[in-house]
Image: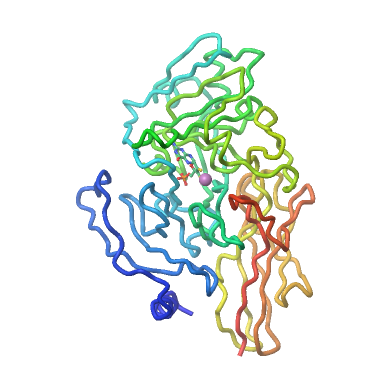
Length: 417
Ligand SMILES: Nc1nc2c(c(=O)[nH]1)N[C@H]1C(S)=C(S)[C@@H](COP(=O)(O)O)O[C@H]1N2
Ligand SMILES: [Mo]
């Protein structure tokens, strides 16, 4: 079914609200840019999901699926995930706070401090880019911990993301560890506390401050990046500089980074102590964030293995005997994808998909599979990825109250007639 037909059907069912797309003060559209009339879509969520969304363009972005406007939460439409890298102007946007100031490269400063450095230092943009620090470029998936939360059953509160709170990009920057070395990291360093220049408007909202364990901060792949896919970072994706923590969910990828404090004690802020935590022992994760572990919960760390069908949403119609292609992407927390198996009969039988080019262990990997349906009726398409350490996707959702790590195998019904 086309989006438009699905939309009209949902209007008939009373599922969509027409007339949104308001401009909120504080976000001026770029000069000369015409505000596009918002379009309403069902965003590929399963039929019956009481989910609505609006396609709307932020300055510098093409129309994305708007989930919330204050703060800005926009996801990438499914069809734009059907390629090796996600274009910058299609990359999802996620904020916790409503106030996103514009920081120029000239005005940008990064303050390195904390009780576990020898000396506090302040870096400018040119110190990163034109200094003696070695530049590094790598491909990595940026995935919101809560991606697919809107598909959680039972329903959980939070931004009701569909499949598109994720993207894959080539990130260029310098190693965080090389920058921290300028300040001299002491032996008793435990965590690095990261803060961006966005801030809460109301005093009751806690500032978005995160920490990572010192070993992850010193990992050779953890970068302070200023380029994405060969271009400056878009404003809404962290301009001028953001942290890139390959393998870990994007909550740690601090945008518009302003300070990094190396500390000897666990950081107790709200976004560590109360949010972005998963029940202990429920997910097959390897990386532990020991200084932040509690009795029953622990911070989310690396991404769990997952896949996404990128050329079908379910509901398509095909002819008997005609070749059908199923395409998608698969990724994990940095071990690399081993294989993707596809079923077209609801899980009764499985065959291996062909894997696309390996773009690096932190990148997603494209895959493709073709079949010729021989009987009429509903065919249930499923894809299941496995990584190189033997983890694969669950058939039943690993439910948790915040809806994180939703990597349950998709089931897409297509009609053959
Ligand atoms: N400064 C700042 N950085 C941030 C956040 C934020 O709210 N403020 N959100 C984090 C979360 S939870 C996600 S999912 C990613 C999203 O990155 P993107 O907006 O570039 O897609 O940014 C991370 N970095
Ligand atoms: Mo996120």
